[in-house]
Image (tube, rainbow, N blue to C red; front, side, top):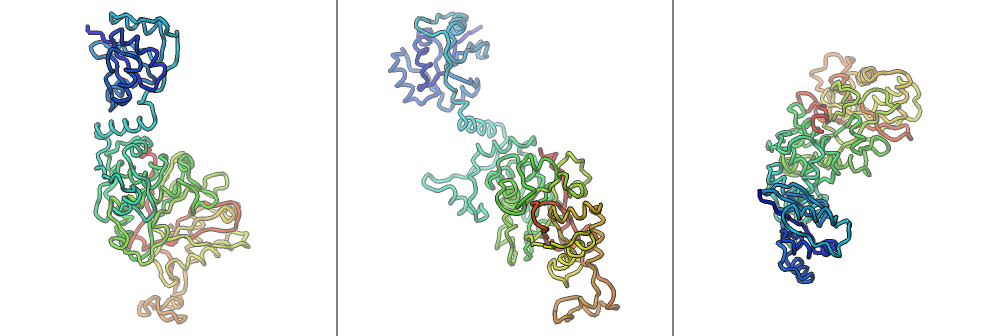
Length: 490
Protein backbone atom coordinates (compact mmCIF):
# COMPACT_ATOMS: atom_id res chain seq x y z
CA UNK A 1 0.00 0.00 0.00
CA UNK A 2 1.49 3.36 -1.12
CA UNK A 3 -0.20 6.34 0.51
CA UNK A 4 0.36 9.84 -0.82
CA UNK A 5 -0.94 13.29 0.12
CA UNK A 6 -1.82 15.40 -2.92
CA UNK A 7 -2.69 19.08 -2.46
CA UNK A 8 -4.22 21.35 -5.11
CA UNK A 9 -3.63 25.10 -4.64
CA UNK A 10 -3.80 28.43 -6.48
CA UNK A 11 -1.48 31.42 -6.30
CA UNK A 12 -4.32 33.88 -5.72
CA UNK A 13 -6.00 31.98 -2.89
CA UNK A 14 -5.38 33.48 0.61
CA UNK A 15 -6.34 30.22 2.32
CA UNK A 16 -3.82 28.37 0.17
CA UNK A 17 -1.20 30.85 1.36
CA UNK A 18 -2.06 29.98 4.98
CA UNK A 19 -1.80 26.23 4.63
CA UNK A 20 0.94 25.85 1.99
CA UNK A 21 3.95 26.18 4.34
CA UNK A 22 2.55 23.44 6.60
CA UNK A 23 1.81 21.16 3.65
CA UNK A 24 5.28 21.83 2.27
CA UNK A 25 6.88 20.87 5.56
CA UNK A 26 4.74 17.72 5.75
CA UNK A 27 6.10 16.54 2.39
CA UNK A 28 2.80 16.64 0.54
CA UNK A 29 2.80 16.64 -3.23
CA UNK A 30 1.91 20.20 -4.13
CA UNK A 31 0.13 20.92 -7.43
CA UNK A 32 -0.72 24.47 -8.49
CA UNK A 33 -3.52 25.36 -10.88
CA UNK A 34 -1.75 28.64 -11.66
CA UNK A 35 0.87 29.49 -14.29
CA UNK A 36 4.52 28.52 -13.70
CA UNK A 37 5.40 32.20 -13.21
CA UNK A 38 2.69 32.84 -10.64
CA UNK A 39 3.45 29.54 -8.90
CA UNK A 40 7.14 30.36 -8.59
CA UNK A 41 6.33 33.84 -7.24
CA UNK A 42 4.02 32.35 -4.62
CA UNK A 43 6.67 29.81 -3.54
CA UNK A 44 9.23 32.59 -3.13
CA UNK A 45 6.83 34.80 -1.23
CA UNK A 46 5.96 31.99 1.22
CA UNK A 47 9.59 30.75 1.41
CA UNK A 48 8.61 27.22 0.48
CA UNK A 49 11.32 24.58 0.25
CA UNK A 50 10.27 23.77 -3.31
CA UNK A 51 8.18 25.18 -6.09
CA UNK A 52 4.91 23.26 -6.52
CA UNK A 53 4.46 21.45 -9.79
CA UNK A 54 2.04 23.16 -12.17
CA UNK A 55 -1.09 21.70 -13.75
CA UNK A 56 -1.30 24.21 -16.58
CA UNK A 57 -3.60 22.05 -18.71
CA UNK A 58 -5.54 21.09 -15.57
CA UNK A 59 -5.28 17.42 -16.52
CA UNK A 60 -4.73 16.24 -12.95
CA UNK A 61 -7.20 18.75 -11.57
CA UNK A 62 -9.81 17.54 -14.05
CA UNK A 63 -9.26 13.94 -12.97
CA UNK A 64 -10.00 14.65 -9.31
CA UNK A 65 -12.20 17.73 -9.93
CA UNK A 66 -12.11 19.49 -6.57
CA UNK A 67 -14.82 22.05 -5.95
CA UNK A 68 -12.48 24.29 -3.95
CA UNK A 69 -8.80 24.79 -3.14
CA UNK A 70 -6.86 24.09 -1.06
CA UNK A 71 -7.93 20.51 -1.68
CA UNK A 72 -5.90 17.89 0.19
CA UNK A 73 -6.40 14.32 -1.02
CA UNK A 74 -5.23 11.01 0.42
CA UNK A 75 -4.31 8.65 -2.41
CA UNK A 76 -3.82 4.93 -2.14
CA UNK A 77 -1.83 3.68 -5.15
CA UNK A 78 -3.22 6.64 -7.09
CA UNK A 79 -6.84 6.03 -6.08
CA UNK A 80 -8.56 8.56 -3.86
CA UNK A 81 -9.36 7.38 -0.33
CA UNK A 82 -10.29 10.69 1.34
CA UNK A 83 -10.17 14.45 0.78
CA UNK A 84 -10.50 17.78 2.58
CA UNK A 85 -11.53 20.89 0.60
CA UNK A 86 -10.93 24.31 2.11
CA UNK A 87 -9.13 24.62 5.43
CA UNK A 88 -10.46 22.19 8.04
CA UNK A 89 -7.44 22.05 10.32
CA UNK A 90 -8.12 18.92 12.37
CA UNK A 91 -9.41 16.82 9.47
CA UNK A 92 -6.46 17.88 7.34
CA UNK A 93 -4.00 16.95 10.09
CA UNK A 94 -5.62 13.52 10.49
CA UNK A 95 -5.45 12.89 6.75
CA UNK A 96 -1.72 13.76 6.65
CA UNK A 97 -1.10 11.59 9.70
CA UNK A 98 -2.77 8.61 8.00
CA UNK A 99 -0.14 8.88 5.28
CA UNK A 100 2.64 8.92 7.92
CA UNK A 101 3.29 12.64 7.96
CA UNK A 102 2.81 15.45 10.44
CA UNK A 103 0.98 18.68 9.67
CA UNK A 104 2.10 21.60 11.81
CA UNK A 105 -1.14 23.30 12.77
CA UNK A 106 0.28 26.09 14.92
CA UNK A 107 -1.27 29.38 13.83
CA UNK A 108 -3.79 27.77 11.49
CA UNK A 109 -7.47 28.64 12.03
CA UNK A 110 -9.80 25.77 12.73
CA UNK A 111 -11.93 26.34 9.65
CA UNK A 112 -11.89 28.55 6.59
CA UNK A 113 -13.60 28.12 3.24
CA UNK A 114 -11.26 27.96 0.28
CA UNK A 115 -11.44 29.47 -3.19
CA UNK A 116 -13.10 27.95 -6.22
CA UNK A 117 -11.11 25.38 -8.14
CA UNK A 118 -10.10 26.47 -11.63
CA UNK A 119 -11.97 23.44 -12.95
CA UNK A 120 -15.22 25.00 -11.74
CA UNK A 121 -14.69 28.35 -13.45
CA UNK A 122 -17.45 28.46 -16.10
CA UNK A 123 -15.13 29.23 -19.01
CA UNK A 124 -12.56 26.67 -17.91
CA UNK A 125 -15.22 24.03 -17.21
CA UNK A 126 -16.59 24.53 -20.71
CA UNK A 127 -13.12 24.15 -22.20
CA UNK A 128 -12.51 20.95 -20.23
CA UNK A 129 -15.88 19.56 -21.26
CA UNK A 130 -15.04 20.23 -24.90
CA UNK A 131 -11.67 18.52 -24.45
CA UNK A 132 -13.35 15.46 -22.94
CA UNK A 133 -15.90 15.41 -25.75
CA UNK A 134 -13.17 15.52 -28.37
CA UNK A 135 -11.12 12.81 -26.64
CA UNK A 136 -14.18 10.60 -26.26
CA UNK A 137 -15.27 10.94 -29.89
CA UNK A 138 -18.44 12.85 -29.06
CA UNK A 139 -17.37 15.78 -31.22
CA UNK A 140 -15.32 15.04 -34.32
CA UNK A 141 -15.96 17.95 -36.69
CA UNK A 142 -12.80 19.61 -37.91
CA UNK A 143 -11.94 22.93 -36.34
CA UNK A 144 -11.55 26.04 -38.46
CA UNK A 145 -8.41 28.00 -37.67
CA UNK A 146 -8.88 31.75 -37.43
CA UNK A 147 -5.84 34.00 -37.66
CA UNK A 148 -4.87 35.96 -34.57
CA UNK A 149 -5.64 39.27 -36.29
CA UNK A 150 -8.82 38.05 -38.01
CA UNK A 151 -12.25 39.10 -36.84
CA UNK A 152 -14.07 35.76 -36.34
CA UNK A 153 -17.37 37.21 -37.54
CA UNK A 154 -15.84 38.48 -40.75
CA UNK A 155 -13.81 35.30 -41.18
CA UNK A 156 -16.90 33.08 -41.04
CA UNK A 157 -18.65 35.31 -43.56
CA UNK A 158 -15.69 35.34 -45.92
CA UNK A 159 -15.54 31.54 -45.76
CA UNK A 160 -19.12 31.33 -46.99
CA UNK A 161 -20.64 29.92 -43.80
CA UNK A 162 -23.25 32.59 -43.09
CA UNK A 163 -26.62 33.62 -44.48
CA UNK A 164 -25.47 37.21 -44.83
CA UNK A 165 -26.05 38.04 -41.18
CA UNK A 166 -23.36 37.65 -38.51
CA UNK A 167 -23.27 34.23 -36.87
CA UNK A 168 -22.11 33.15 -33.42
CA UNK A 169 -18.65 31.54 -33.68
CA UNK A 170 -19.29 27.82 -33.00
CA UNK A 171 -16.45 27.12 -30.56
CA UNK A 172 -16.17 23.56 -29.22
CA UNK A 173 -17.21 24.88 -25.82
CA UNK A 174 -20.46 26.34 -27.19
CA UNK A 175 -21.20 23.23 -29.22
CA UNK A 176 -20.76 20.92 -26.22
CA UNK A 177 -23.12 23.08 -24.16
CA UNK A 178 -25.65 22.96 -27.04
CA UNK A 179 -25.40 19.16 -27.15
CA UNK A 180 -26.49 18.96 -23.51
CA UNK A 181 -30.02 19.76 -24.70
CA UNK A 182 -30.52 16.42 -26.45
CA UNK A 183 -30.17 12.87 -25.18
CA UNK A 184 -28.98 11.70 -28.57
CA UNK A 185 -25.33 10.86 -29.24
CA UNK A 186 -23.60 13.67 -31.14
CA UNK A 187 -22.63 11.28 -33.94
CA UNK A 188 -26.16 9.99 -34.53
CA UNK A 189 -27.20 10.69 -38.11
CA UNK A 190 -30.16 13.03 -38.41
CA UNK A 191 -30.41 13.07 -42.20
CA UNK A 192 -28.53 13.24 -45.46
CA UNK A 193 -29.14 16.80 -46.59
CA UNK A 194 -29.76 17.79 -50.23
CA UNK A 195 -28.62 18.90 -52.65
CA UNK A 196 -25.29 17.11 -52.13
CA UNK A 197 -26.28 14.55 -49.52
CA UNK A 198 -24.22 16.03 -46.69
CA UNK A 199 -24.33 13.86 -43.56
CA UNK A 200 -25.96 15.94 -40.85
CA UNK A 201 -25.08 14.39 -37.51
CA UNK A 202 -26.49 15.76 -34.27
CA UNK A 203 -23.11 17.46 -33.76
CA UNK A 204 -23.22 19.25 -37.11
CA UNK A 205 -26.78 20.41 -36.51
CA UNK A 206 -25.69 21.67 -33.07
CA UNK A 207 -22.84 23.61 -34.72
CA UNK A 208 -25.30 25.37 -37.00
CA UNK A 209 -27.71 25.93 -34.11
CA UNK A 210 -24.91 27.71 -32.25
CA UNK A 211 -24.19 29.80 -35.34
CA UNK A 212 -27.88 30.68 -35.66
CA UNK A 213 -27.97 31.95 -32.08
CA UNK A 214 -30.03 29.18 -30.46
CA UNK A 215 -29.91 29.22 -26.67
CA UNK A 216 -30.02 25.41 -26.39
CA UNK A 217 -33.57 24.21 -25.72
CA UNK A 218 -34.37 24.84 -29.39
CA UNK A 219 -32.01 22.06 -30.54
CA UNK A 220 -34.50 19.13 -30.40
CA UNK A 221 -36.94 21.16 -32.52
CA UNK A 222 -34.24 21.94 -35.08
CA UNK A 223 -33.30 18.25 -35.23
CA UNK A 224 -36.92 17.24 -35.78
CA UNK A 225 -37.41 19.94 -38.39
CA UNK A 226 -34.36 18.72 -40.31
CA UNK A 227 -35.60 15.15 -40.15
CA UNK A 228 -38.94 16.25 -41.61
CA UNK A 229 -37.39 18.49 -44.27
CA UNK A 230 -35.12 15.70 -45.48
CA UNK A 231 -37.95 13.20 -45.90
CA UNK A 232 -38.03 12.11 -49.54
CA UNK A 233 -41.59 13.35 -50.07
CA UNK A 234 -40.72 16.85 -48.88
CA UNK A 235 -38.36 17.12 -51.87
CA UNK A 236 -35.90 19.46 -50.20
CA UNK A 237 -33.62 19.36 -53.22
CA UNK A 238 -36.43 20.83 -55.29
CA UNK A 239 -37.29 23.38 -52.62
CA UNK A 240 -33.67 24.54 -52.60
CA UNK A 241 -33.14 24.52 -56.36
CA UNK A 242 -36.45 25.91 -57.64
CA UNK A 243 -36.68 29.37 -59.11
CA UNK A 244 -39.84 29.90 -57.01
CA UNK A 245 -39.46 31.59 -53.59
CA UNK A 246 -40.31 28.89 -51.00
CA UNK A 247 -38.31 27.71 -48.02
CA UNK A 248 -39.12 25.33 -45.17
CA UNK A 249 -41.75 26.83 -42.85
CA UNK A 250 -41.54 25.19 -39.40
CA UNK A 251 -44.79 24.96 -37.43
CA UNK A 252 -44.30 23.63 -33.89
CA UNK A 253 -47.28 22.19 -32.04
CA UNK A 254 -47.16 21.06 -28.42
CA UNK A 255 -46.02 21.94 -24.91
CA UNK A 256 -42.29 21.73 -25.61
CA UNK A 257 -42.60 24.70 -27.96
CA UNK A 258 -43.33 26.97 -25.01
CA UNK A 259 -40.71 25.22 -22.84
CA UNK A 260 -38.17 26.07 -25.54
CA UNK A 261 -39.26 29.71 -25.40
CA UNK A 262 -41.17 29.89 -28.68
CA UNK A 263 -43.79 32.54 -29.35
CA UNK A 264 -47.25 31.57 -30.54
CA UNK A 265 -49.00 34.86 -29.86
CA UNK A 266 -48.40 38.47 -30.94
CA UNK A 267 -45.92 38.77 -33.81
CA UNK A 268 -45.46 34.98 -33.85
CA UNK A 269 -44.52 35.11 -37.54
CA UNK A 270 -42.21 38.08 -37.06
CA UNK A 271 -39.11 39.13 -35.18
CA UNK A 272 -38.43 39.63 -31.50
CA UNK A 273 -38.52 36.06 -30.20
CA UNK A 274 -35.17 34.33 -30.05
CA UNK A 275 -36.45 30.76 -30.34
CA UNK A 276 -38.71 31.40 -33.34
CA UNK A 277 -36.04 33.28 -35.24
CA UNK A 278 -33.14 30.95 -34.49
CA UNK A 279 -34.97 27.65 -35.09
CA UNK A 280 -35.81 28.59 -38.66
CA UNK A 281 -32.35 30.06 -39.16
CA UNK A 282 -30.58 26.98 -37.77
CA UNK A 283 -32.49 24.77 -40.21
CA UNK A 284 -31.55 26.98 -43.16
CA UNK A 285 -27.90 27.23 -42.10
CA UNK A 286 -27.71 23.44 -41.86
CA UNK A 287 -29.17 23.14 -45.36
CA UNK A 288 -26.59 25.64 -46.59
CA UNK A 289 -23.50 24.45 -44.71
CA UNK A 290 -24.10 20.69 -44.63
CA UNK A 291 -26.25 20.15 -47.70
CA UNK A 292 -24.59 22.78 -49.86
CA UNK A 293 -27.65 24.83 -50.84
CA UNK A 294 -26.13 28.24 -51.52
CA UNK A 295 -27.98 31.24 -52.98
CA UNK A 296 -27.11 32.05 -56.57
CA UNK A 297 -25.60 28.61 -57.08
CA UNK A 298 -27.66 25.61 -55.98
CA UNK A 299 -30.47 27.87 -54.72
CA UNK A 300 -31.89 29.39 -57.91
CA UNK A 301 -34.80 31.40 -56.46
CA UNK A 302 -35.73 34.26 -58.77
CA UNK A 303 -36.86 36.45 -55.89
CA UNK A 304 -36.64 34.42 -52.70
CA UNK A 305 -38.04 35.94 -49.54
CA UNK A 306 -37.32 36.60 -45.85
CA UNK A 307 -38.29 33.00 -45.07
CA UNK A 308 -35.09 31.93 -46.82
CA UNK A 309 -33.27 33.14 -43.71
CA UNK A 310 -35.63 31.20 -41.46
CA UNK A 311 -39.35 30.87 -40.78
CA UNK A 312 -40.62 29.14 -37.66
CA UNK A 313 -43.44 29.71 -35.20
CA UNK A 314 -45.38 27.86 -32.53
CA UNK A 315 -49.10 27.18 -32.43
CA UNK A 316 -51.35 28.43 -29.66
CA UNK A 317 -52.82 25.41 -27.92
CA UNK A 318 -54.47 27.18 -25.00
CA UNK A 319 -58.15 27.27 -24.12
CA UNK A 320 -58.85 29.53 -27.11
CA UNK A 321 -57.66 26.93 -29.65
CA UNK A 322 -60.44 25.85 -32.03
CA UNK A 323 -58.98 22.34 -32.38
CA UNK A 324 -55.84 20.30 -31.59
CA UNK A 325 -52.53 21.35 -33.08
CA UNK A 326 -51.54 20.81 -36.69
CA UNK A 327 -48.95 18.14 -35.84
CA UNK A 328 -51.41 16.34 -33.58
CA UNK A 329 -53.97 16.18 -36.35
CA UNK A 330 -51.50 15.05 -39.01
CA UNK A 331 -49.45 12.53 -37.00
CA UNK A 332 -51.99 11.56 -34.33
CA UNK A 333 -49.71 12.70 -31.52
CA UNK A 334 -50.82 12.64 -27.90
CA UNK A 335 -51.60 16.07 -26.37
CA UNK A 336 -48.47 15.97 -24.24
CA UNK A 337 -46.26 15.33 -27.27
CA UNK A 338 -44.74 18.05 -29.41
CA UNK A 339 -44.53 17.77 -33.16
CA UNK A 340 -43.04 19.72 -36.04
CA UNK A 341 -44.70 20.25 -39.40
CA UNK A 342 -42.48 21.46 -42.22
CA UNK A 343 -44.21 23.15 -45.16
CA UNK A 344 -42.59 24.48 -48.33
CA UNK A 345 -43.94 28.01 -48.24
CA UNK A 346 -43.37 31.56 -49.35
CA UNK A 347 -43.63 34.64 -47.15
CA UNK A 348 -46.89 35.24 -45.23
CA UNK A 349 -49.51 37.67 -46.49
CA UNK A 350 -52.12 39.59 -44.54
CA UNK A 351 -55.76 38.41 -44.62
CA UNK A 352 -58.38 40.81 -43.25
CA UNK A 353 -62.08 40.36 -42.60
CA UNK A 354 -63.41 42.55 -39.81
CA UNK A 355 -67.13 42.06 -40.39
CA UNK A 356 -67.83 38.30 -40.67
CA UNK A 357 -69.39 36.91 -37.51
CA UNK A 358 -70.63 33.56 -38.74
CA UNK A 359 -68.44 30.72 -40.08
CA UNK A 360 -69.87 30.49 -43.59
CA UNK A 361 -69.19 34.14 -44.36
CA UNK A 362 -65.71 34.03 -42.90
CA UNK A 363 -64.89 30.83 -44.80
CA UNK A 364 -65.98 32.54 -48.02
CA UNK A 365 -63.70 35.49 -47.27
CA UNK A 366 -60.73 33.23 -46.55
CA UNK A 367 -61.42 31.15 -49.66
CA UNK A 368 -61.34 34.25 -51.83
CA UNK A 369 -57.79 34.93 -50.64
CA UNK A 370 -56.74 31.31 -51.12
CA UNK A 371 -57.58 31.66 -54.80
CA UNK A 372 -54.55 33.90 -55.23
CA UNK A 373 -51.88 31.43 -54.10
CA UNK A 374 -49.33 31.67 -56.94
CA UNK A 375 -52.05 32.83 -59.37
CA UNK A 376 -55.81 32.50 -59.56
CA UNK A 377 -55.28 30.72 -62.89
CA UNK A 378 -52.96 28.11 -61.39
CA UNK A 379 -55.03 25.09 -60.31
CA UNK A 380 -54.30 21.81 -58.51
CA UNK A 381 -50.59 22.53 -58.35
CA UNK A 382 -50.22 24.35 -55.03
CA UNK A 383 -50.78 23.84 -51.31
CA UNK A 384 -51.50 26.54 -48.73
CA UNK A 385 -50.97 27.12 -45.03
CA UNK A 386 -53.64 29.29 -43.43
CA UNK A 387 -52.65 30.65 -40.00
CA UNK A 388 -55.84 31.65 -38.25
CA UNK A 389 -55.65 34.48 -35.76
CA UNK A 390 -57.58 34.24 -32.47
CA UNK A 391 -60.51 36.45 -33.45
CA UNK A 392 -61.09 34.59 -36.71
CA UNK A 393 -60.59 31.22 -35.00
CA UNK A 394 -63.15 32.15 -32.35
CA UNK A 395 -65.85 32.34 -35.02
CA UNK A 396 -65.24 28.72 -35.99
CA UNK A 397 -64.74 27.53 -32.41
CA UNK A 398 -68.00 29.04 -31.17
CA UNK A 399 -69.85 27.58 -34.16
CA UNK A 400 -68.42 24.14 -33.38
CA UNK A 401 -66.68 23.72 -36.72
CA UNK A 402 -63.97 21.08 -36.85
CA UNK A 403 -60.71 21.45 -38.73
CA UNK A 404 -61.98 19.03 -41.38
CA UNK A 405 -65.25 20.92 -41.77
CA UNK A 406 -63.44 24.17 -42.47
CA UNK A 407 -61.00 22.48 -44.86
CA UNK A 408 -63.91 20.93 -46.77
CA UNK A 409 -65.72 24.25 -47.01
CA UNK A 410 -62.62 26.12 -48.16
CA UNK A 411 -61.99 23.43 -50.76
CA UNK A 412 -65.58 23.65 -51.98
CA UNK A 413 -65.44 27.41 -52.21
CA UNK A 414 -62.20 27.41 -54.19
CA UNK A 415 -63.74 25.81 -57.29
CA UNK A 416 -64.32 28.07 -60.29
CA UNK A 417 -65.91 27.49 -63.70
CA UNK A 418 -63.39 26.33 -66.29
CA UNK A 419 -64.51 29.07 -68.66
CA UNK A 420 -63.21 31.74 -66.28
CA UNK A 421 -59.80 30.07 -66.10
CA UNK A 422 -58.90 29.49 -69.74
CA UNK A 423 -56.13 31.35 -71.45
CA UNK A 424 -57.25 34.74 -72.63
CA UNK A 425 -60.31 34.99 -70.37
CA UNK A 426 -60.50 38.47 -68.90
CA UNK A 427 -57.56 39.52 -71.02
CA UNK A 428 -55.13 37.33 -69.06
CA UNK A 429 -52.84 35.20 -71.18
CA UNK A 430 -52.13 32.60 -68.50
CA UNK A 431 -54.64 29.87 -67.75
CA UNK A 432 -55.97 26.47 -68.73
CA UNK A 433 -55.47 25.21 -72.27
CA UNK A 434 -58.78 25.71 -74.09
CA UNK A 435 -58.27 22.40 -75.88
CA UNK A 436 -58.64 20.62 -72.53
CA UNK A 437 -61.97 22.28 -71.70
CA UNK A 438 -65.12 20.50 -72.88
CA UNK A 439 -67.55 22.22 -70.51
CA UNK A 440 -66.90 25.89 -69.63
CA UNK A 441 -69.27 25.57 -66.67
CA UNK A 442 -67.42 22.59 -65.13
CA UNK A 443 -65.92 23.52 -61.74
CA UNK A 444 -62.15 23.31 -61.43
CA UNK A 445 -60.61 22.99 -57.97
CA UNK A 446 -57.87 25.29 -56.77
CA UNK A 447 -56.36 22.60 -54.55
CA UNK A 448 -55.93 18.89 -55.22
CA UNK A 449 -57.74 17.96 -51.98
CA UNK A 450 -59.21 19.59 -48.91
CA UNK A 451 -56.33 18.47 -46.71
CA UNK A 452 -53.92 20.37 -48.97
CA UNK A 453 -55.14 23.47 -47.12
CA UNK A 454 -53.22 23.25 -43.85
CA UNK A 455 -54.67 25.07 -40.85
CA UNK A 456 -52.59 26.39 -37.98
CA UNK A 457 -53.53 28.64 -35.07
CA UNK A 458 -51.27 31.49 -33.92
CA UNK A 459 -51.20 35.23 -33.42
CA UNK A 460 -52.11 38.03 -31.05
CA UNK A 461 -55.55 38.54 -29.56
CA UNK A 462 -56.19 41.94 -31.12
CA UNK A 463 -57.16 42.14 -34.77
CA UNK A 464 -59.62 40.30 -37.01
CA UNK A 465 -56.73 38.99 -39.05
CA UNK A 466 -55.21 35.77 -40.30
CA UNK A 467 -52.13 35.03 -42.38
CA UNK A 468 -51.81 33.04 -45.58
CA UNK A 469 -48.64 31.24 -46.62
CA UNK A 470 -48.68 30.09 -50.20
CA UNK A 471 -47.07 26.77 -50.95
CA UNK A 472 -44.81 25.43 -53.64
CA UNK A 473 -45.73 22.83 -56.25
CA UNK A 474 -47.56 20.10 -54.37
CA UNK A 475 -47.71 16.33 -54.27
CA UNK A 476 -45.74 14.35 -56.83
CA UNK A 477 -45.07 17.58 -58.73
CA UNK A 478 -43.14 19.03 -55.83
CA UNK A 479 -43.30 18.92 -52.04
CA UNK A 480 -45.62 17.26 -49.53
CA UNK A 481 -45.68 18.72 -45.99
CA UNK A 482 -44.08 16.45 -43.40
CA UNK A 483 -44.80 16.05 -39.70
CA UNK A 484 -42.58 14.32 -37.14
CA UNK A 485 -42.45 14.13 -33.36
CA UNK A 486 -39.88 16.16 -31.44
CA UNK A 487 -39.83 13.64 -28.58
CA UNK A 488 -37.17 11.26 -30.02
CA UNK A 489 -34.76 14.19 -30.26
CA UNK A 490 -35.14 15.44 -26.70
